[in-house]
Image 1 (cartoon, rainbow, N blue to C red):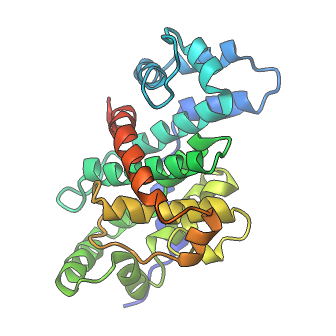
Image 2 (tube, rainbow, N blue to C red):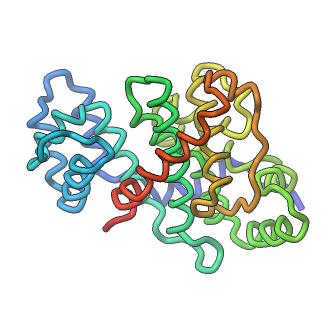
Length: 283
């Protein structure tokens, strides 16, 4: 059997799935130097469900602001426009993949794993005193998006691979590469590139199982690599991978984390996890 062309798989998804209009409007506003926080808040207010989620998030322990945030305009001001764009992107991507093959993937569980990885990345970035920790959260959230492409375009083969990996105690991403000639990480990078998303997201997604391949966003990719391993080890949700992938020790060294940092990262992840789940998965 000939191996599928990854570009054709991506085309099959992008023909029926595009990023929601609300994100495109926010992106255009962000690209206009004359756009004010009030104007951006007006765009966000067009989506009442998103508005409610943003306000809940702004008032949550995720940010721990001292006063109550009552309006989207306040949320834009206190969260920051760059961070808010990342948050809107996270919400938009989840909305794209709603119709998936029944019985093959539990979407709630899939996103719970992705959210756990995103929160782990956010916590790691906070430990490292990075400036935009929301970008780390979105990088982690999107790391397995290529697997959704495989579930959607190759459901029968993916079902067989999952069963085989369970029987043989194999890693699914390695089985994907053996069977298709590429894995979900490469597909995810291609999809995000097709959607014209930032190069940071493309590289962290494409290289999260092989962080040594990252060229431009080395620290960010190492963060997602370690975040994914933590999410798998803690068994937070399920993207299809039943076993914990191996840790690239170089990635851990790049992040400059002490061995004892794992416990505090896991503890903080646990604190922030339920807030992130409510934001991403609430209707």
